[in-house]
Length: 151
Image (tube, rainbow, N blue to C red; front, side, top):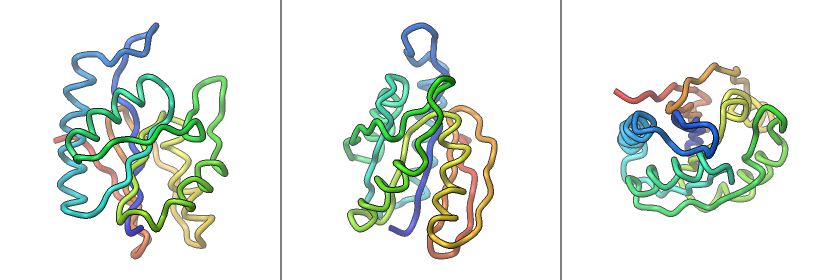
């Protein structure tokens, strides 16, 4: 794996976790920005099992031409803190299967996981605040982190 991209879900309605029209539109734009970053690299797409994450993963999967794997380890919300170690183990186990791994998940996970992953791999990265329908990309070779936002 050369790059790890951790994507925060788009705007959604409560109850039901249905993406809003604006959420679908901004996530589609973000997905196109991510496609520009990954180019023709092989991609593994994994998503939290939250309904909003699965809906976002379907959008990015369509644009990247891949299907998402659904994993509970990538779930977090106000009552369930992110399972950073579980997410690390999951990602680590799949590193050899693609040049780019894309994780679609929620606020807490996106803000904390890239820095946790970097520390577990032996380099330093910092936690960032990430707005809805945006992503953090960690380059595993240069150890640089970049924010990806829709245009």
